[in-house]
Amino acid sequence: MHIAPKIRGYICTTAHPAGCIQNVKQQIQYVSNQPSIASGPKKVLIIGASTGYGLASRIVAAFGAKAQTIGVFLERAADDKRTASAGWYHTAAFEQAAHQAGIYAKSINGDAFSDAIKQETIALIKKDWGGAVDLVIYSLASPRRTHPQTGVSFKSCLKPIGEPYRNQTMDMISGRLSDVCIEPATPKEVADTVAVMGGEDWMMWIEALLAEKLLAKGVQTMAYSYIGPKLTDRMYSKGTIGMAKKDLVATGKILQHRLRPIDGQAVIAVNKAVVTQASAAIPVVPLYISLVYKIMKEKQLHEGCIEQMYRLYADRLYRTDRKILVDAQGLIRIDDWEMREDVQQAVAALWSKVDEGNLATVTDWVGCRHEFHKLFGFEVEGVDYSLPQVAALPIPSLNLPI
Ligand code: NAD
Image 1 (cartoon, helix red, strand yellow):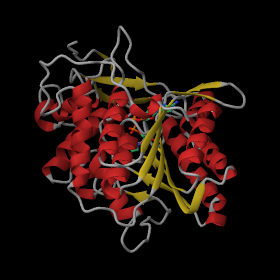
Image 2 (spheres, rainbow, N blue to C red):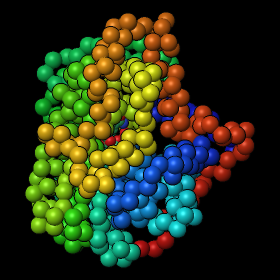
Image 3 (cartoon, helix red, strand yellow):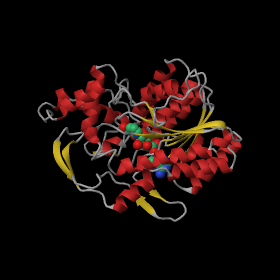
Image 4 (cartoon, rainbow, N blue to C red):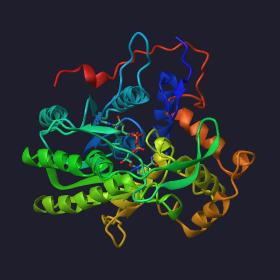
């Protein structure tokens, strides 16, 4: 079977097995070339572990700190007509590499918002670890959530609040620039986005793990957020997704309190903007990302998910002095290089100069489009795309009984 990208809007409906495997190998290689994280975690649960920041977190935990990992995600297996999703192939490759290196890795595929998947995860932790989880990463990005207690389904949306928002936006694939006017969210849309991407589900996970006494003394739990510059704030930090992130931060404070009896900590890491399946879907943000990539590459500050997550673990969360480095608001800022004044000034100066004629030189659109293809295993260096592929790759641990 030969597999080509089939792109619809901002998603690709096919994924290339060998390309996804190579992506994971490259990330493992990067981490293996860094100093190991001596005081890192030992037993890590990652919720949203198959792509983007969650996958990179899992790779850093396993290959940077030799941690055992359980990863939860929602991915599609291959069938007669379709390839598996990229996260499926990433996990197959990750587990294989971890097992070869003698590192425990098991995975659970299903809806992390449901009680059933939480119970399945708890059963696996009890059986294999007997508890003692010392890090819980919450890295979900989802367009919808069904509430496990009420059965009500919520859809998140990416909209401004209050006034309509006009700006230019970019199609990451075609490089087409257009002016958009996005109508403000209704109060229900704001509330629904908070229900999907806010902190309630993170809290439910931690409460479920606490109730079963599966968290180690001194456990850390960390969720990911984004703030970004003024340029995108109507769409991001002051928009519907920003309200959800505020709720996540507020949940972190409650969890901090809840974990005190076991000396635990709940933290939010504010990560930099990177090309992932989640960020490609946000209006206006891809144009900003293509500008910030350009400037950060020129200043030799560029990082993708794996470089960010390694720096997060090594320089913020598991420092040799054992202090967690946070700002005055108690947030871990690993977006510090993106938010540097010189970087933001350069981006703002270019924003109004961009047009379709100069997009490829003024911005790093070409690099971002390449990154977008790589998310699905296409255009990955070192892969021979003329070779036929087997689409039905197994994830080793999914076939094992719990
Ligand atoms: P992503 O789309 O690459 O990954 C999302 C993960 O969530 C995948 O593993 C997917 O399988 C899983 N998932 C989605 N719905 C699920 C469900 N119902 N049940 C189980 N798993 C499910 O996203 P990402 O960009 O890595 O984002 C992860 C987190 O990082 C989000 O909180 C996001 O806001 C944050 N963040 C992203 C950026 C960015 O630029 N991409 C920047 C800062 C912070």
